[in-house]
Amino acid sequence: MSIMQKQDLTSEELQLLSSEMNKKQKSTGTTWLLWVFTAGFGGHRFYLGKTGTAVGMLLTFGGLGIWSFIDLFLLNGMIKNTNDKIENEVISEIRLLKNAKQNSRLAE
Image (cartoon, rainbow, N blue to C red):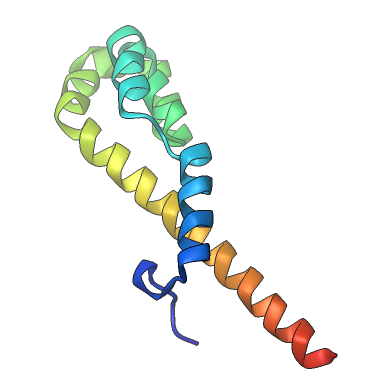
């Protein structure tokens, strides 16, 4: 089974993807604000779903600030990777819905 790519989606499916991404994607502004105010506690990492490393930051006060400083340079990439992961999950859900519809038509 081939993996459905964004360019393989119909216009209706692209609208669904856009709608779901608007609901689920992580905000760059929110992430940066969390970094500014909670970097030592890993608040930005909790927001991005990186719970394991967020707990590590929480317990070490951001690696005594070193880890928080390093995140200054990594944050944009982490946001992009998280949103790419969310987009791929939504595309997978769309593919499952499409397959379910096709299977229900075949069963009729």
